[in-house]
Length: 487
Ligand code: MSP
Image (tube, rainbow, N blue to C red; front, top):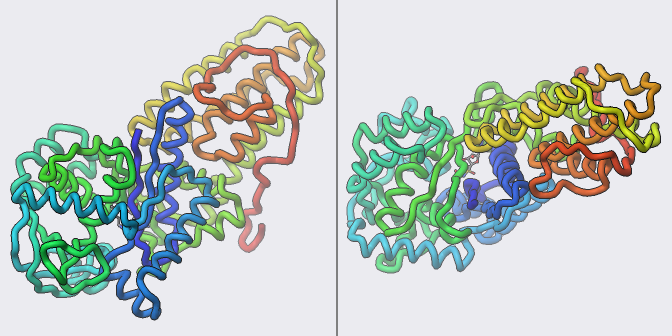
């Protein structure tokens, strides 16, 4: 499975929105790896374009120096968030430049490029052209800042040639997900596709166009080519933010069709993290530093919150209060507390050697464990990541209920006690195994405390086995004070 995140503009250090989609992608990659699949996760930085050129100039540094610094900030953050990517691609790498130019020559060979004059509005922050009716009071609809009026002669791509093919691709398959985004793209298609310009004249920080000195590739053509240079094309899933759906669902498949290259299987658009309803972005000035959150609460807590709290595909508002409520509820009092209970009980009572037969309480617990794989698999299939995390959380509560019902702390019959503890330890282990894509550190630690080994591929099935050596440890998630200003 080949999975991608967007490549992030190397204009500024990463914020929580970038972390959001990267965490989601990493959870997906980890889930399929845990099921024994070969996964290739690609992420990286988008390093060309007028915006970066200007930012570097304002800083008085060469654009390459600027993007080197920013790319390092991204890789450092991914390390701290335990992102296991297979390749971090940078669009200034020679290998990427070669691939982008190969794409370019394929487009030339197809006859879909022609010279034309572009006149209209351009948002340098989006690196996107906008039609007058797309602007909000004359401003960019994403950044709410003025666009620049451009007029320049450059190369155009005959997107309009692909109207019928794209209508079939988008209307008749599940190429675009979720359905709300698909309908949005169908709406754009109904208005009729317009050709778009694929080179820029007034920019020098980009990939030079071989046949037109003084022009560079339009940064989106350059950026989209990263998916070809970065991994084993074709991709199975592109994860993208909802604001870049047009590029991934219309421009990208048309460019690939023109170039005679295979199409990705699907594009999934997620929503925005907002603060007070506004997209979190550098331009809006409402960024949240993911590194600071990791310092304070640990990487698992940050990862968990974003997967669990926001239904993947929808927008979600970030507040520290909601973050703490989820943390305490699901991690400290939920999974973390269960691991404490299970390991404390199992180490306190020596193994009796023989077991009492299972009762209806054990059957119920086992059925809950056996229902997990199907529910979680269905959730991952549709990228309903929050639903997968919810399923594990509900299972944790089922194990808690089992403990409350069987009350091993009051049990005097050693054989019955042994049966209950086997079940508690194994059920908690299963919870850890299924939580591994979301909270890899705590899941690894819990799994090791419970059975002495890390989670292994395909190890999610509940197995009736006598418990082995169990070890206790510090709480996996310290409870946080939620009162204002408190910790
Ligand atoms: N460089 C382009 C993408 C090229 S892909 C071939 C770009 N970069 S970006 O840095 O502006 O944003 C990339 C992605 O970061 C978004 O599509 C989205 O996945 C994520 N996010 C950025 N801000 C976000 C939020 N406030 N909320 C959620 N995700 C956000 O566009």
